[in-house]
Length: 513
Image (cartoon, rainbow, N blue to C red):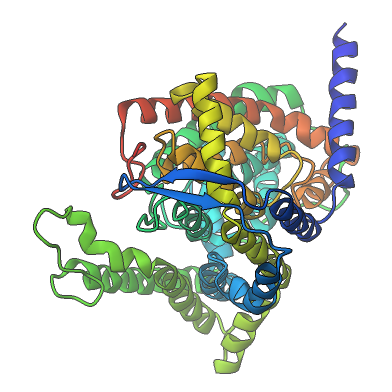
């Protein structure tokens, strides 16, 4: 019976892997979606719907055909503007300049190594999960640096290395949306959400800190749950490690030299100095990043300019200490080295830039045709007819986001086509755009660690085979499945409680409208 169940699970996972691998590249998917919007706009040309703005005014909107004279003309004349105005493009590239330089100098890697190497052995699992969650502030560096480091650390203290790898991977991938700091994902998703919300309320603004409070609390939740799952389920399931099943060469962690340690500490102090200087620009009345607050306006309104420049500030918080570390460790000898590191960082974003061009057309087409607003109204009416509101609706949307992740890996790519539909739709039933966004982030994160479409999964398998030559996709997914289930239930419960109590999701970000 047990063997039959295991075979069924493996067949299911193989089917998911095969189906997922058969899907086109995200760029091709967006090209097909854009074509689909063009055809639908012609099919439903003239269909009208009354859209109630949050101001209380009602506006009649009709579908405009992109295959009409005006539509074809607009597609050609607006193509470049659609690309340039694609909301996440500028913020993501700006943040990645700073992160890219800091990563290439070794500053980020040094920070991760210092974190997991300086804690007692009894806390090593929690440290790995926590470091994995926090690594999302440096984009995907955690997959490359932290997962093999976790395996090495466990092997070094006599524990199963795959348990260390699993704990790291759970934090990096399963807790990807959570962090104590603003990451590149925050402005990216916020811009898409903001763009979608404006189809219902042009005056609505979603900033990069809109989910900050919830994500800070999520760091604690994921660290605790991930640690318990590692110690109580995954490591006992893996059993004793037979080192003869791995490679002959020993895996060792390079010790942190005194030179690296001193350089890192000095760079951290520089980073703290930069953070304090930036904070003063927003805290001191009359400072450049602080706005005057009128009578009756919430105090948080004074930080609107500060929030609007958060991408530039994050870039500075990475690039300045990163350069400092590079100079002290001799990895940066002159300005040409910095320029090359920044250029290499942008070169690695080539696929994203191409995706942004196609996705930018899709979002713009969806908005120009008015299909987004009309779909939102009809969808909201359907939900009300079904009686699906409140907590059941919230959980249903979370499940949809989690299932989508099994067939399309990129968080930003999924949100680029989901936001124009779901943000306006859920606004019309009383959910704030910020709540819709954070629900998507939870759903997307909990299945990150078991989707066969995770681009770093092949690298994780290679890391695992270093300690067990028989490791494969089934090994990784079976080890990660308990994390996925535990994260889903615990994170969903926290989200529902947050929603029912009405705790702000971030500065000025309520759960309902």
